[in-house]
Length: 375
Ligand SMILES: Cc1ncc(COP(=O)(O)O)c(C=O)c1O
Image (cartoon, rainbow, N blue to C red; front, side):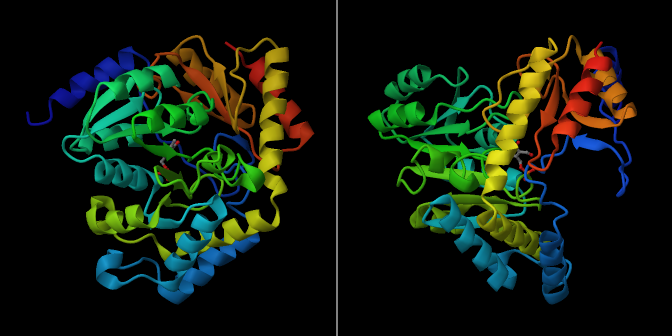
C-alpha cells in the first residue's frame, strides 16, 4: 500500500498522546481567548477590518500572481515603507506569511560555503530555512552568546546567526546585544525573527531590534509576521536596501509565491497606523503578561517570567497538557497547548498570550480557571 506507513505513524502518535486535531471555531465564540496571538487586540479593530475590506474592494480577493509578474500595488509599497520606517530599518519586503519571510531571509542570505549558526530554540520556520539553505547549519545552545562566538571563530568564510528575538515556546528574549557583539567580532551577519517582539517590545512596539539599537545596522536583518500584533496575515523582511533588493532577485518564496493578499496588506497597514497613534498598547500587552505570570506563580504554577507577551506554564505530560487545555476551554478560557515535537526539550506546556485589552477581571478569571482545572 502506497501510504501504509501513515497508519503506523498515526498509531505511534496516539500511543505517545501527540495526536493533533482540528476544532471548529465560531465567529461569535464566547471563550476568553488566551490562545491567539492578537497581542494588541487589533484583529477585529474597525479600522483594521475596514482596511481589509477597502483593499479587497479596490484590488480584489487576491493579488493574482507574484509581484514580479502582476506588479506591485501602492498598498504593498506603502506598507513596506511604513513598516521599515516604524521599525527603524532602511527597507522592507512583504511576503505571504512570516514563514515565507523566514525561508526567504535564511536561504537567500546563507549561500553555499557559508555557515549558519542557529539557536536550539528557534521557530520551525527558521529551522526549515536552515534546512533549505545551501550553507551549513550548526545548532548552538539556546541564548548562548559564548557558544555562538566559539562556533563563529572556527569558520573563516561568510557566516550568519539566526535567532528568534522572543522565543515562541517560553516567551524568553534572546540576549541580542551580546549576540551582536559575538557576531561582530568575526564579521558575521544576523537574521533575527521578531515575530513576537513587533508591537510588544521597544518604544511604542517598534520591536526587539529597535530596543537593542540594532535596527538599521548594515549587518542586521529582521523578519516579522503581520499575523500577531498587527492582527492581519503575512510577513516581512526588514534590512539594508541592498539586502532587500537581493531578496527580490534571489528569494524563492518571494519570486515564486503570489504576492501578499490585498486584504491582508490593507489590514496590516491600518493596524500599523493604529499602533503608531496608540503606542501605549505595546506597554499594556507587557503589563498584562506580567500580571498573568505574577498571579500564576502566586498560585503555585511553574511559569517562565515573560520578556514579551507569551506566558508559558509547565504541564506534567503531553496527555495532561491536552486535557488541561480542554478543561480550560470547557470552562470558557481558550489556552494554547505545546507538546513535542513542537517543543524540542520534550516539556509540555500551556501557552498563554497576553492581550493588551484584557481586563484585570478577565486575567483573574483566566488564572482561576487554570488553577481549578490543573491536573
Ligand atoms: C517566531 C515565529 N516566527 C515565524 C512565525 C510564522 O509566522 P506566520 O504565522 O506569519 O507564518 C511564527 C508563528 O507563527 C513564529 O512564532
